[in-house]
Length: 538
Image 1 (cartoon, rainbow, N blue to C red):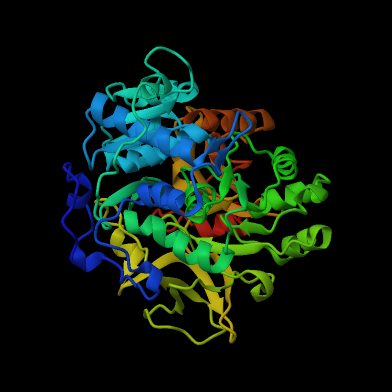
Image 2: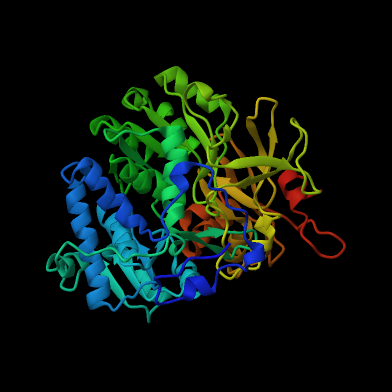
């Protein structure tokens, strides 16, 4: 695919796109996907929406206060001015963002993209070693960081220029921005300039950087959101996924702003808290994982959810039992969906009367999906195979040989096993790699193994996902101790706490079994299937 002339002065992203022959096939079959050659998605989400719906409408809401569309546009412009006038950021530079979900993080994202730079949003849960890897891959020129989460960032990248926000201190981003005009003209980026880099984890444990264009950001709103969710300007969105997850970025920022709706951004959203906010703020659209819906029902908060018009579930498979339990208590028909960081958002789903509980759904308008056999050809309906998808978005890893694994013959291979029924519904079977999906988080087993192996008492270990009713899967570690001892509850607790200090806490092994030796092939390869089957000690 021939690219448009880039507006990027810093050509790092263009220079590190996959080779043309490694790209998936892109489809633009809907008329709304015919974007102009010059396009800045932040301008579209704010300026164009304001022209349609007005500047006084509520936009970003939070327990600390609400911002109108006009206020968000002004702050985003002020942030863009700080970046370009004070920090020397030029189009194409990467700007790392670190902080919890709140209006300031969202405004920073919009300001970065408005300035023609590339947003690299990271979870505040990441530890220094994980942040260092992100910086090594994306090479950010600057970081905008919530003052409460600066320590790990500074430890990971001591030479990275950082502007803090939220602390009210001299030099704080808010103070620097307040003196700037709020009318920064968006950089006229190309529709196929990179707007954002999102990170995911592969089976090797090393994160993969996925690059998404300005047109991609709008495409997820103009397909899944517009055609399946069908939001209105009166909708109020909220949910649990961080804006650093593409699931959260779409559901809590891109979709509401594209529709002229509002988003309630919550720094903390435990099930009880989330349900309370939904009821108190009149939320009509919620994005979370199946575990979130189960927990809200189990805690007796069903009545708080009855005002929801849209309840979206992704991040892990939605069991039919969970769907029916929520429906019985609330009358809400949960909208299931499967997406990926590589595809940016959901590409198979169903809503309303089209929902079949237990099935993920059908291909979202604008996308096509198939189930392929080992030969790369579609298999008959009812046959399990590898899920493959094409559409207006697709995988573009940043300088990563694993592009060849995800994209084959023009298809994006998601790493999921599926079957399609005669009615065209797709039914999830399992992951085909070693990614563990727990409570909506993707966790690479080898990364947890690497953390465990840093403990002086661990000789070797293997980590897999095992089924769990509450979380879909949990991380389970099989550990061989250096002294050959049988292990103990105290040692298990010590290892769990140790892992929490090495990597993001949600990745720690919730179950640990001690073994005399790990099951291996005659060539020394770990037999993960035996760990999953539970006969590792036999």
